Amino acid sequence: MKKGIVLLSLLVISLESYSMGIFRPREPKPDPDPPVQTPTDPPPTTTDPTPDPNPGPVPIDFIEVANIIGPQVDSQYGSYKALDTLRIDSMENQMDYCEAALDDQDKFSQRIAFFVEMQLLDSKVDLGNLAPYYAVPRNNDDFIATGLAQSPLCISTRSSLTKTLKKSDRVPSSSVIAKLNDFENEVNGLRQRMNDGEDEARMLLTKKWTKFFSCLAYTESLSSADSSSSNRVAAKYAPANYRKPAGVKFYEDPYQDEASKLNIGMFQFTPNGGGNIGACIGSWNEFYPQCSFSKKSSRSSLIEYFGSTLQTVNAFCGVNKVVQTFSIQTNSTKSTAYHPANSGVAKADRCVTPWIYSGYAYNHFGPLMNSTKKNLSSLISCISK
Image (cartoon, rainbow, N blue to C red):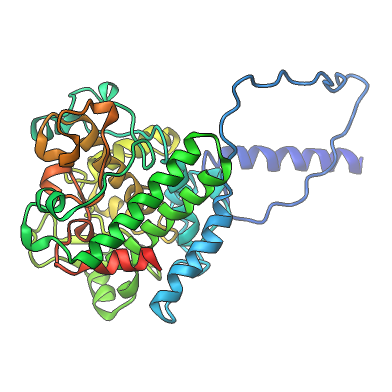
């Protein structure tokens, strides 16, 4: 009789768990009871699976990458350990629980490292609606595949930066250009080794790009995320039942209009689906259809998604924005949209550059176009250390 009660209770618990939907609960997972065998159970299958004749690359241990790069970058910014801090999630926004690999990996560094590795090659973009502005295909399916390591990086010179940054006064000093070249050459060398089948090179390349985005996150937001100004702006815009999490910056840009002035989170996105997060929402929905959300979502909903405790959507979009920039450079027919070294080069053979003006190749980040004439120096110095 007691055994029947136990089995009935387990059935009820199972049904309740299933009814919670696609989002995983945060309760500790109990050790499962051993399966109960009955005479009617079929015997377990013992046939060895057929080996995959074309196995893919060995998955990268993104946790190991994060555990190395997070503390490295944090150490450059004093006592504020934004990347390596374990985040305690009190709001449990559904968007933070769409990726099973990130269960219980609650550091910003882990989110960045995971999305870097995910988008190294053949990443998805949603840029067809930008065809009138950037001379790219109107159908997303017609884009040449892209990713952080899909194409080699172009080598920067004073002459090339004068063209890609649009304004000559944004061209950095020779010492900064030398650091850009070091980064470009190192990435290209690792990319070639990865393409030659070296698994360690893929790991090292993931580390390099994770450091790039970790430093970028600091130059964008992490060093001032919990300032009094950030808390004040969050209080002004916070929807009901939302409280700004630690490490998540809220900023009002005085040079933008009302629709664009609010910037949120690790990579500073405006909660307006009609703005430049639209392309990223499209990419997110391709990767995570079970967690898709509309570009027409309310500002309150977008604040919750981009201002979540674990910064999952924000981290994904930060990486995807650079992939989008590379995709514009690869697929555009406008000469201003790509590095001058690509003149006369077939689209599939082009190199790409992170250091480019926003209006030329849909770049989201000020430091990547040296917008303050010193933030590119700060960024590449962080990456180089």
